[in-house]
Amino acid sequence: MSAQIWPPISHEQLIKEEEDSLAAELAWLLESLQEVLASLKSGLEECLALLDMKEPGTTLALSTLRSETVKGFVTRDISIRLPSLPPPRSLPSYPLRISSPLPLPQLSALLNLLNQALDIIDISTWTGDPTNGPFISGQLRLLADTIDEAKAVMKGGEDVIGGKWWEDDCAGDETIFTPPLPPNLSPHLTLTPTSLLLTIRTLTPSPTNSTPHGSSTPTSSTTGPSSASTLTGLSLRTRLTQILAPLPAPTHDEADYTFVYRGQEVKVREKVRVEAQDPSLMAVGAKLSAVGHAVKGWRWKLAVVMGEEVGEEE
Image 1 (cartoon, one colour):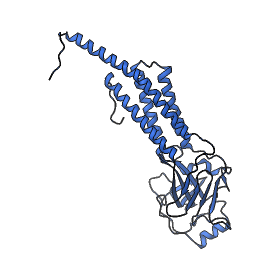
Image 2 (cartoon, helix red, strand yellow):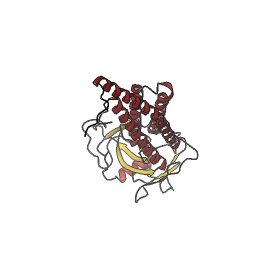
Image 3 (cartoon, one colour):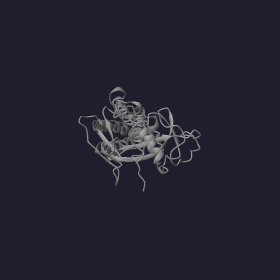
Image 4 (cartoon, one colour):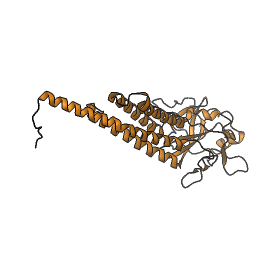
Protein backbone atom coordinates (compact mmCIF):
# COMPACT_ATOMS: atom_id res chain seq x y z
CA MET A 1 0.00 0.00 0.00
CA SER A 2 1.38 3.41 -0.92
CA ALA A 3 0.26 7.01 -0.54
CA GLN A 4 0.41 9.41 -3.46
CA ILE A 5 -0.27 13.13 -3.77
CA TRP A 6 -2.75 14.28 -6.37
CA PRO A 7 -2.18 16.29 -8.37
CA PRO A 8 1.50 15.22 -8.47
CA ILE A 9 4.13 17.75 -7.29
CA SER A 10 7.84 18.01 -7.92
CA HIS A 11 10.40 16.39 -5.65
CA GLU A 12 11.69 19.78 -4.49
CA GLN A 13 8.20 20.92 -3.56
CA LEU A 14 7.58 17.63 -1.73
CA ILE A 15 10.68 18.17 0.39
CA LYS A 16 9.57 21.71 1.17
CA GLU A 17 6.11 20.52 2.20
CA GLU A 18 7.68 17.91 4.50
CA GLU A 19 9.89 20.56 6.13
CA ASP A 20 6.91 22.87 6.61
CA SER A 21 4.94 20.01 8.15
CA LEU A 22 7.79 19.18 10.58
CA ALA A 23 8.14 22.86 11.48
CA ALA A 24 4.42 23.10 12.21
CA GLU A 25 4.55 19.91 14.32
CA LEU A 26 7.59 21.22 16.23
CA ALA A 27 5.80 24.51 16.93
CA TRP A 28 2.78 22.59 18.22
CA LEU A 29 4.98 20.41 20.44
CA LEU A 30 6.81 23.42 21.89
CA GLU A 31 3.51 25.17 22.62
CA SER A 32 2.09 22.07 24.29
CA LEU A 33 5.30 21.63 26.27
CA GLN A 34 4.73 24.89 28.12
CA GLU A 35 1.67 23.41 29.81
CA VAL A 36 3.64 20.27 30.61
CA LEU A 37 6.46 22.32 32.16
CA ALA A 38 3.95 24.03 34.43
CA SER A 39 2.73 20.60 35.56
CA LEU A 40 6.31 19.39 36.13
CA LYS A 41 7.05 22.50 38.16
CA SER A 42 4.02 21.81 40.32
CA GLY A 43 5.23 18.26 40.94
CA LEU A 44 8.71 19.43 41.97
CA GLU A 45 7.22 22.06 44.29
CA GLU A 46 5.17 19.31 45.93
CA CYS A 47 8.41 17.37 46.50
CA LEU A 48 9.94 20.40 48.22
CA ALA A 49 6.82 20.82 50.36
CA LEU A 50 7.02 17.17 51.46
CA LEU A 51 10.67 17.62 52.48
CA ASP A 52 10.09 20.95 54.20
CA MET A 53 11.04 21.04 57.88
CA LYS A 54 7.83 21.75 59.75
CA GLU A 55 7.21 21.73 63.47
CA PRO A 56 6.46 19.48 65.21
CA GLY A 57 7.35 17.23 62.27
CA THR A 58 6.48 13.61 61.61
CA THR A 59 7.11 11.14 64.43
CA LEU A 60 8.57 7.95 62.94
CA ALA A 61 8.75 4.77 64.98
CA LEU A 62 12.21 3.23 65.15
CA SER A 63 12.88 -0.34 66.30
CA THR A 64 15.06 -3.22 65.18
CA LEU A 65 13.30 -6.34 63.91
CA ARG A 66 12.48 -8.96 66.57
CA SER A 67 14.68 -7.27 69.19
CA GLU A 68 15.10 -4.12 71.23
CA THR A 69 18.66 -3.39 70.21
CA VAL A 70 17.56 0.03 68.98
CA LYS A 71 14.17 1.54 69.75
CA GLY A 72 12.63 4.99 70.00
CA PHE A 73 11.44 7.79 67.75
CA VAL A 74 13.41 9.60 65.07
CA THR A 75 12.27 13.06 66.16
CA ARG A 76 13.99 13.10 69.53
CA ASP A 77 14.77 10.03 71.66
CA ILE A 78 16.55 6.78 70.82
CA SER A 79 17.44 3.97 73.23
CA ILE A 80 20.30 1.58 72.43
CA ARG A 81 21.00 -1.86 73.84
CA LEU A 82 24.31 -3.29 72.66
CA PRO A 83 26.76 -5.53 74.55
CA SER A 84 29.64 -3.23 73.55
CA LEU A 85 27.85 -0.11 74.84
CA PRO A 86 27.12 -0.46 78.57
CA PRO A 87 24.26 1.84 79.67
CA PRO A 88 24.63 4.36 82.50
CA ARG A 89 23.93 3.09 85.99
CA SER A 90 20.26 2.52 86.88
CA LEU A 91 19.24 2.68 83.20
CA PRO A 92 18.25 -0.39 81.11
CA SER A 93 19.62 1.07 77.86
CA TYR A 94 21.89 3.79 76.57
CA PRO A 95 19.84 6.97 75.90
CA LEU A 96 20.52 9.09 72.85
CA ARG A 97 18.58 12.34 72.58
CA ILE A 98 18.81 14.76 69.65
CA SER A 99 18.78 18.10 71.45
CA SER A 100 19.45 20.41 68.49
CA PRO A 101 18.84 20.24 64.70
CA LEU A 102 20.74 17.38 63.09
CA PRO A 103 21.96 18.39 59.61
CA LEU A 104 21.76 15.74 56.89
CA PRO A 105 24.10 16.55 53.96
CA GLN A 106 22.22 14.06 51.79
CA LEU A 107 18.92 15.90 52.37
CA SER A 108 20.58 19.28 51.70
CA ALA A 109 21.96 17.96 48.40
CA LEU A 110 18.53 16.65 47.41
CA LEU A 111 16.85 19.99 48.17
CA ASN A 112 19.53 21.82 46.18
CA LEU A 113 18.97 19.59 43.13
CA LEU A 114 15.20 20.08 43.30
CA ASN A 115 15.67 23.86 43.37
CA GLN A 116 18.05 23.59 40.39
CA ALA A 117 15.36 21.68 38.48
CA LEU A 118 12.85 24.45 39.23
CA ASP A 119 15.33 27.05 37.97
CA ILE A 120 15.77 25.10 34.72
CA ILE A 121 12.00 25.10 34.18
CA ASP A 122 11.76 28.84 34.89
CA ILE A 123 14.55 29.56 32.41
CA SER A 124 12.83 27.41 29.79
CA THR A 125 9.56 29.26 30.32
CA TRP A 126 10.49 32.88 30.96
CA THR A 127 14.17 33.67 30.36
CA GLY A 128 14.94 31.77 27.16
CA ASP A 129 13.03 31.44 23.90
CA PRO A 130 10.29 28.81 24.40
CA THR A 131 9.84 28.54 20.60
CA ASN A 132 13.48 27.63 19.96
CA GLY A 133 13.64 23.86 19.46
CA PRO A 134 17.39 23.34 20.08
CA PHE A 135 17.29 25.53 23.21
CA ILE A 136 14.31 23.69 24.71
CA SER A 137 15.86 20.33 23.81
CA GLY A 138 19.04 21.31 25.69
CA GLN A 139 17.01 22.44 28.69
CA LEU A 140 15.12 19.14 28.79
CA ARG A 141 18.41 17.25 28.66
CA LEU A 142 19.71 19.31 31.61
CA LEU A 143 16.46 18.82 33.51
CA ALA A 144 16.55 15.05 32.96
CA ASP A 145 20.16 14.86 34.21
CA THR A 146 19.30 16.91 37.31
CA ILE A 147 16.34 14.70 38.19
CA ASP A 148 18.43 11.55 37.67
CA GLU A 149 21.06 12.99 40.03
CA ALA A 150 18.38 13.75 42.62
CA LYS A 151 17.09 10.18 42.40
CA ALA A 152 20.65 8.88 42.82
CA VAL A 153 21.09 11.01 45.96
CA MET A 154 17.88 9.52 47.40
CA LYS A 155 19.21 6.00 46.88
CA GLY A 156 22.12 6.74 49.21
CA GLY A 157 25.38 4.82 49.50
CA GLU A 158 28.96 5.82 50.17
CA ASP A 159 29.25 7.65 46.83
CA VAL A 160 26.66 10.33 47.67
CA ILE A 161 27.15 13.39 49.87
CA GLY A 162 27.04 12.37 53.53
CA GLY A 163 27.32 8.67 52.70
CA LYS A 164 30.66 8.10 54.43
CA TRP A 165 29.84 7.69 58.12
CA TRP A 166 33.46 8.06 59.22
CA GLU A 167 33.49 11.61 57.77
CA ASP A 168 30.32 12.68 59.62
CA ASP A 169 30.97 16.18 60.98
CA CYS A 170 28.17 15.82 63.55
CA ALA A 171 30.15 13.26 65.52
CA GLY A 172 32.37 15.89 67.13
CA ASP A 173 29.56 18.40 67.80
CA GLU A 174 28.71 18.07 71.49
CA THR A 175 25.62 20.29 71.15
CA ILE A 176 23.61 17.91 68.94
CA PHE A 177 23.27 14.89 71.23
CA THR A 178 22.43 14.70 74.93
CA PRO A 179 24.43 13.27 76.55
CA PRO A 180 27.40 13.95 74.21
CA LEU A 181 28.42 10.94 72.15
CA PRO A 182 31.01 8.67 73.74
CA PRO A 183 34.10 8.23 71.57
CA ASN A 184 33.24 4.62 70.75
CA LEU A 185 29.70 5.31 69.44
CA SER A 186 28.80 6.44 65.90
CA PRO A 187 25.13 7.01 64.97
CA HIS A 188 24.68 7.75 61.26
CA LEU A 189 21.35 8.85 59.78
CA THR A 190 20.80 8.71 56.01
CA LEU A 191 17.96 8.62 53.47
CA THR A 192 16.67 5.83 51.27
CA PRO A 193 13.91 6.17 48.64
CA THR A 194 11.32 5.00 51.20
CA SER A 195 12.71 5.53 54.68
CA LEU A 196 15.19 7.02 57.10
CA LEU A 197 18.07 4.65 57.80
CA LEU A 198 19.80 4.78 61.18
CA THR A 199 23.06 2.86 61.49
CA ILE A 200 24.53 2.47 64.96
CA ARG A 201 28.18 1.45 65.22
CA THR A 202 30.28 0.80 68.29
CA LEU A 203 33.99 1.16 67.73
CA THR A 204 37.20 -0.30 69.07
CA PRO A 205 40.81 0.83 68.54
CA SER A 206 42.51 -0.58 65.47
CA PRO A 207 45.74 -2.60 65.60
CA THR A 208 48.74 -0.55 64.56
CA ASN A 209 49.43 -2.75 61.50
CA SER A 210 45.93 -2.46 60.01
CA THR A 211 45.07 -1.03 56.61
CA PRO A 212 42.68 1.98 56.42
CA HIS A 213 39.39 1.57 54.55
CA GLY A 214 39.74 2.26 50.82
CA SER A 215 42.92 0.26 50.23
CA SER A 216 42.91 -2.91 48.15
CA THR A 217 43.76 -5.16 51.11
CA PRO A 218 41.28 -5.35 54.00
CA THR A 219 42.56 -6.16 57.46
CA SER A 220 41.79 -9.41 59.19
CA SER A 221 39.01 -9.48 61.76
CA THR A 222 40.08 -9.16 65.40
CA THR A 223 38.76 -11.34 68.21
CA GLY A 224 38.46 -10.09 71.76
CA PRO A 225 39.98 -6.83 73.01
CA SER A 226 42.74 -5.29 70.97
CA SER A 227 46.26 -4.80 72.30
CA ALA A 228 46.29 -1.30 70.85
CA SER A 229 45.61 1.79 72.97
CA THR A 230 41.98 2.42 73.80
CA LEU A 231 39.91 5.28 72.45
CA THR A 232 40.49 8.47 74.36
CA GLY A 233 37.68 9.24 76.77
CA LEU A 234 36.44 5.72 77.55
CA SER A 235 35.43 5.30 81.18
CA LEU A 236 37.19 2.88 83.52
CA ARG A 237 34.00 0.83 83.68
CA THR A 238 33.92 0.41 79.90
CA ARG A 239 37.59 -0.54 79.75
CA LEU A 240 37.20 -3.17 82.47
CA THR A 241 34.14 -4.58 80.68
CA GLN A 242 36.14 -4.96 77.46
CA ILE A 243 38.96 -6.73 79.30
CA LEU A 244 36.97 -9.01 81.63
CA ALA A 245 34.11 -9.84 79.25
CA PRO A 246 35.45 -9.77 75.69
CA LEU A 247 32.86 -9.79 72.95
CA PRO A 248 32.73 -12.44 70.22
CA ALA A 249 34.34 -11.64 66.91
CA PRO A 250 32.24 -9.27 64.77
CA THR A 251 30.49 -10.80 61.75
CA HIS A 252 29.09 -7.76 59.93
CA ASP A 253 30.21 -6.52 56.50
CA GLU A 254 32.66 -3.93 57.89
CA ALA A 255 34.46 -6.23 60.30
CA ASP A 256 37.58 -6.53 58.14
CA TYR A 257 38.13 -2.80 57.56
CA THR A 258 39.79 0.01 59.45
CA PHE A 259 38.41 3.55 59.42
CA VAL A 260 39.81 6.91 60.45
CA TYR A 261 37.11 8.33 62.72
CA ARG A 262 37.56 11.60 64.63
CA GLY A 263 41.31 11.46 64.03
CA GLN A 264 41.82 7.87 65.22
CA GLU A 265 42.02 4.54 63.43
CA VAL A 266 39.17 2.33 64.58
CA LYS A 267 37.39 -0.90 63.71
CA VAL A 268 33.65 -1.48 63.91
CA ARG A 269 32.84 -3.79 66.80
CA GLU A 270 29.04 -3.91 66.42
CA LYS A 271 26.82 -2.59 63.65
CA VAL A 272 23.02 -2.31 63.70
CA ARG A 273 20.88 -0.95 60.86
CA VAL A 274 17.25 0.01 61.37
CA GLU A 275 14.83 1.73 59.00
CA ALA A 276 11.88 3.99 59.77
CA GLN A 277 9.41 4.07 56.89
CA ASP A 278 8.61 7.68 55.91
CA PRO A 279 5.47 8.39 53.84
CA SER A 280 6.92 11.72 52.72
CA LEU A 281 10.03 10.10 51.24
CA MET A 282 7.88 7.48 49.52
CA ALA A 283 5.79 10.24 47.92
CA VAL A 284 8.88 12.20 46.87
CA GLY A 285 10.41 9.12 45.25
CA ALA A 286 7.23 8.38 43.32
CA LYS A 287 6.83 11.98 42.15
CA LEU A 288 10.46 12.24 41.05
CA SER A 289 10.13 9.04 39.04
CA ALA A 290 6.97 10.35 37.35
CA VAL A 291 8.57 13.72 36.56
CA GLY A 292 11.70 12.06 35.20
CA HIS A 293 9.66 9.71 33.01
CA ALA A 294 7.65 12.63 31.60
CA VAL A 295 10.77 14.66 30.82
CA LYS A 296 12.43 11.79 28.98
CA GLY A 297 9.24 11.14 27.03
CA TRP A 298 9.15 14.73 25.78
CA ARG A 299 12.84 14.55 24.93
CA TRP A 300 12.08 11.61 22.63
CA LYS A 301 9.18 13.46 21.00
CA LEU A 302 11.30 16.51 20.22
CA ALA A 303 14.18 14.33 19.04
CA VAL A 304 11.96 12.54 16.51
CA VAL A 305 10.63 15.79 15.03
CA MET A 306 14.02 17.57 15.06
CA GLY A 307 15.94 14.57 13.72
CA GLU A 308 18.16 14.29 16.77
CA GLU A 309 19.47 11.16 18.44
CA VAL A 310 18.89 10.31 22.10
CA GLY A 311 21.24 7.78 23.69
CA GLU A 312 19.89 4.43 24.85
CA GLU A 313 20.86 5.15 28.46
CA GLU A 314 18.49 8.11 28.45
